[in-house]
Image 1 (cartoon, rainbow, N blue to C red):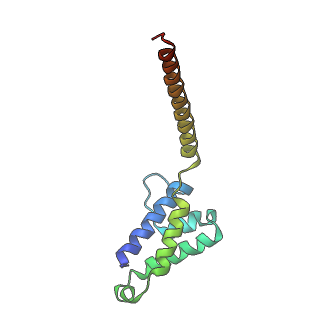
Image 2 (image 1 turned 120 degrees about the vertical axis):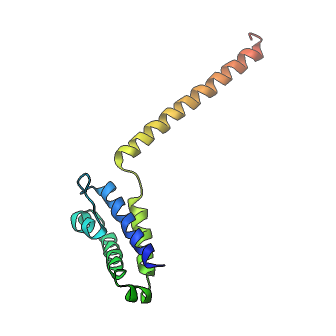
Image 3 (image 1 turned 90 degrees about the horizontal axis):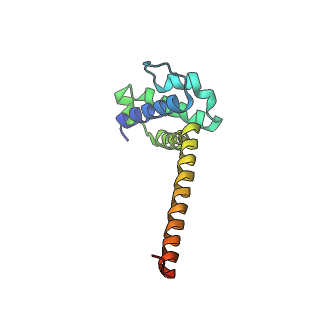
Amino acid sequence: MTPLNVRSWAEEVAVLMATRLGGVRRGESYDLATMIRRRGGALPRKLLKKAEILRDAETVTNAPKIARQTDFSNAAQAHADLVAYLKPFGRVTRMQERATNFAASVVFGLLVLGIVIIWVLVWQGFL
């Protein structure tokens, strides 16, 4: 785990927080510290602590000598937990997926019904 990994983890979590929880104006750049300050209250308490661990690990990477001596395993676990929480899509996307799945089920049912009707017509000798 290099300091570059920790920076990319922090950027990924900041982007996920911005897209999932909001709090960013259009065209504005943001980092994890900003997102924690703005929308950290929307995270569950345990995940807020993990976000702070990741933020602190990112600030350690600014000092290369200390970063080489630091173990970032807690930051890796915090990143994994935060991504697992923030990765699911928003409510609108979930509703769109449900509607798509329902429509696909209906189409599949109609397809099977049509095949059965054609099979019965062929079996009875009408086709």
